[in-house]
Image (tube, rainbow, N blue to C red; front, side, top):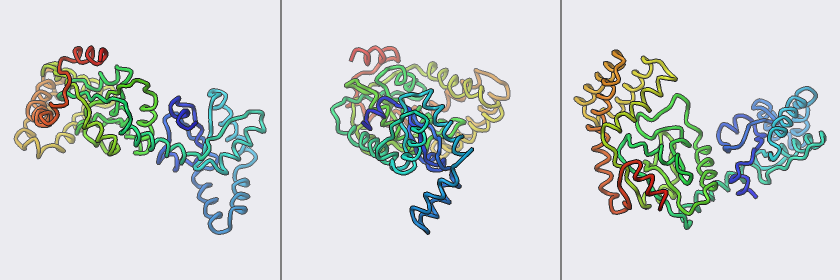
Length: 342
């Protein structure tokens, strides 16, 4: 039953306190607490010092009358919009039982997850563990920076976009304005997405084990680095244009030119030692000029320099160790056609 809940992305009411929810939840869950952080802390301290009965009585005194009605109406509204909902607390115990009973008194029946968050979390961990040994064939989409590997993974129905799940594009320049999810959320989302794919073949983008500050589970990653690969071979100019659109044009929709210029300069500094100080100073100056002049050509210039002097060299070194696993190499459209027919 737990597998089905995760696979079908059944809407879930998470009754835990916000501090618990922030540490990890599930893609289809919404946090509608029965106890908020300060209330949970009080009840927990009472349980520790005076026992379960006194703690339960305190909980009922904190959530009664208007407070109880507000929380109850929040649950009912969600259930009305999501009639297949389930609810859960930390271990499927007292909090979810109380909420279920209160909701039942209004004439609405909602099931609760046996074992709560802990059971669902363990199910996700088991999915990721088993995935490394199952019979599905994995194919990794590789290619130089700017080849739009992510676009191809997300376009194909049997692809899992790890960078989307991690909310990070995987490089020193890959961060977004919004933060990355909690590590537990990333793993849970990966497990849920894996369960959703019925195809015998699953596609991933070629990634380092770390995507920003998040880490792909070890056994899962080990299967990735031992799977077959296909390589997108795109011309430099097309890659430059793609990076310009992704990292400059789209980014300027959400932040000012000065802010983006400063951000790119800071990110460039992170790789300055590997890039070399002469190249770092040259490219950093070109970034500044490109924003000052608001020039697409100038942006193309620094992007091209960065690819040729850093990313392409790094990719060429890494791909040498993977060529024995390559089953196809071609243009973006060629790789797409190959994977659809495979």
